[in-house]
Length: 157
Image 1: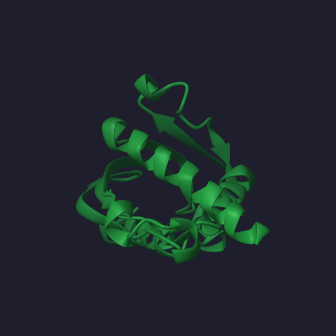
Image 2 (image 1 turned 45 degrees about the horizontal axis):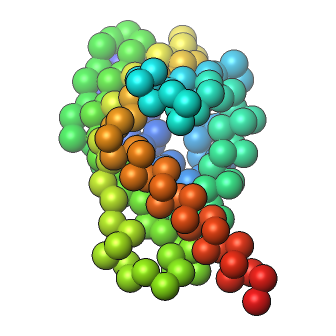
């Protein structure tokens, strides 16, 4: 597969995170795609592997508390013919109603991610290995739990 195609696939993969679009993500994936998370040191907080359907549900749940989650590449490595490695940063933007009483500065978060994408002969992603920023992920988990509570409280009113 051409390097140019793999680079555009990597860019489309990252762009799909911006609006947490399940449709955009699934369009890039093979029907049998599995999304795995690492490192194991994050257990028990490490998400289980996700097929396309469970990943779409995961994104939909995130949309309830996040307005956007732009992921920006630091470097993209293409290992032709079928592998892409992306080193990136992600900055979630929490919805105002999910932030509660805290100001926006208290919701600031930047995480580093490394994605390894395996691409099949049809140009679809069939395997994703996502390395999470161990230390920062614990902060993100805490922020997301607080955002869910804030959102639930705001909907009770």
